Length: 92
Image (cartoon, rainbow, N blue to C red; front, side):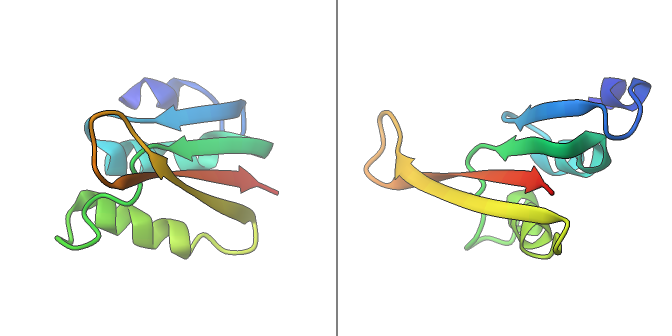
């Protein structure tokens, strides 16, 4: 996870976050996305009712400010009876 710190700020056009430790990855990835770059967070709607790490990340996404354009994309995933959400944050 910390390997991203070996790269300078703003050097990535795309960072995708999925799997475990998403909150920590999100925090580390924010300043590594360059202007016009995208940060894609899968299942960003998890924990909204439990207040877990993904809830904290979801609130951070809501407060990114004018430097970021946020797109929330709900949709159906495999083997589920409910929609999932992927969030795409674009650095302006």
